[in-house]
Amino acid sequence: MALMTVLSPAAAQETSLSAQPPGGPEWQAEDGRWRSLFDGGSLEAWRFLHGKPIDSRFWTVEDGLLRTLPGGQWGADIISKDTFDNFAFCAEWKVATGGNSGILYNVREDQWRGQDSVPGRVRRAWLYLGGVTLLAVFLLLLRRGFLRHDMARALVLGLYLAWLAHSLHPFERLLAYAHYMQNWKAAGLELQIYDDDAHRGSTLQPSHGNGALCDIFPPTSRESRPAGDWSESCLVVQDVRVRHWLNGVEVLAYDLESPEFQQAVARSRYRSIAGLTRKAPMRVALQNHDGQITWFRRVRVKPLP
Image (cartoon, rainbow, N blue to C red; front, side):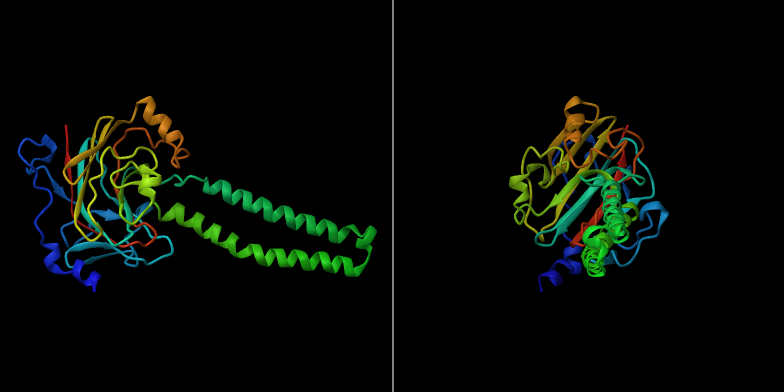
């Protein structure tokens, strides 16, 4: 019943959160430079990675809202077709209880995402599989000592087949995950969208809290609203200066070229993504985090000088 409430057309017509008090920053001004990236009906401004069209298993438009779907084991992100240089990007959103999502910028399509190097994990898995297989073949062909006996070699073969049966499923999952990370998951710096009330991570790891630069910098204040309530996140990129806004409050500011930022990235899960900290015309992504339900509306971008 709660889901029906948040999906109702009345909810989609709630008063905009974007109205700012007089004297706010210039980028917030409601002028003709704002461009809508979601008009309540079309996803024309978005695509999946590598030029793929959006898969309806993962995203849908419902009652004028853009909504993630749990259509796959790990979800899939959408990225903007256009690139932006200096810009403000704003989106109104709400999450279901326990929700986790994000707005990614400086998106890379040809890099791996995650703290552990997925290609490295795949190589280690292949080496492990190949090494044990070669050892089993060596023992079966050795025919010395107790291995001269057929029963002993049968025992080695049985143990190898049992190990292989035990290892194949996680190995297949790793290969599937590697394929997913290459083809469905955007790599970029992430303005975190989070249900702070439901996740202990916001307390134990402040850099994972709502408004944070995920796994790099925590927000300077907590401006979260409960799950099911509409919030607004804004990202402002001007040269190498980046600011995060949550519900009308600036919660984080940092410099992409500062030593503090470079050191924080080197300690984070994003350290292996080449070029992530380099300022360039960039795409923005909306995250479908493992199929967790998030709704978006009034997604828009504004060029800045």
